[in-house]
Amino acid sequence: MVLENIFDSLNISAVMRSCDAVGIREIFVVYTQDYLTRRGLILGKKTSAGTFKWIDVYVFDNLSDCFARVRERYGRILATHLGEQSQSLFALDLTQPTALLFGNEDESVSPEALALSDGNFTIPQMGFAESLNISVACAVTLYEAYRQRAQQGAYDDRPKLNEGQQEQLFQRWVAMLREKNANHQLAIPIDSDSPPIPPVFVTRDPDAPEKAPGRPLPLTRFDL
Image (tube, rainbow, N blue to C red; front, top):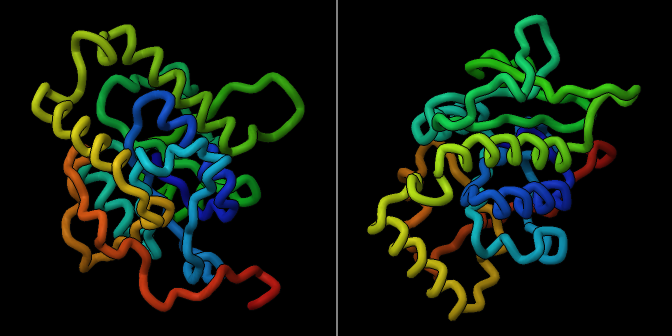
């Protein structure tokens, strides 16, 4: 899941809750607008229902850096966009490795992000509203992916992680239950100089700082 310029942390936390429900263990957030790039991202406890403990959230200030990391990990990136080449969500094959890109409700996915994507899709609607709420749109899309993968047995006898990786992930979760670390609520800043992002099943250093030092409080458009 890739979120571009989603400025409401409550929406991001709601997306995390849906991701956790279908087994997604990481989210990539990219801020390319000046009033967003300077903010720290703190994930809500109540809105995410505590899933900030189980999901890694990476935040980028550069679109190209974000796409490079996501493509390295998942290969294909599909954006939500209404255009001549758009496919219906229900026509997509979501059983293969795929990253799904969502923009904010006011401006949608940026032209720059759309140009970097491998395709785009829409969620069919029959009413008069132009779009779904971002967290609802993500949930609908994720559950279509869940449906397709469940039919292939990805949640039963054909899991994406092998037994050794599953055990590592389980031990990571056990360790997280034992500790109370405020860092879990902070998104992890990533740039071109950051080391490779470890797989989701690899235990992180609980004492490692996960927030860029000196980052000011969130700014609004009016502050600029």
